[in-house]
Image 1 (tube, rainbow, N blue to C red):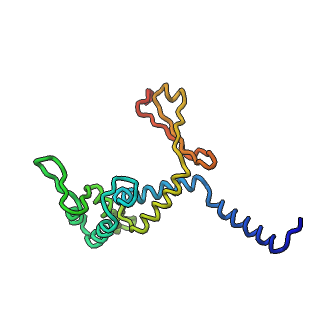
Image 2: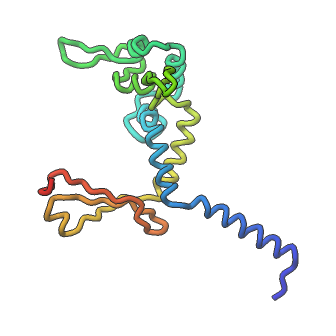
Length: 190
């Protein structure tokens, strides 16, 4: 079989593309990325109705208004008063007084925690309230990555005897175990 110079170039080009694409297929790196985006965008996914992750409270437009309000309100207590709930002492329940109805915990996560950095300057650490476009693109990446992993029960007879539950996170394309964890709650050994 004879191969022309252009065919050889095409074959080499395809192989280089395949090698470069496979360089991104490290299952541990993918799992770390999955955990990173989950940690970064978890609260935002739970807040949005357009993302089927939690019990979404907010439409996309409301979320955008919430972020704009956060950016225009530097004081956390003013922000929490504007977006949070009030506590009714008669009923012992939190009552919605605005369109957002966020818990104090969610309001703090979106507004951010003021911290001091190593140079003594104030820095705000946020665990929510990311831009909507970033939240949606992260959700698409999460859906793609999460389909590549599966959590399986890996408990054996000894684990059952001692009341432990062992779970493995498996990379489904190869069957490789990425992470193994043991829940010792109720274990005789603890």
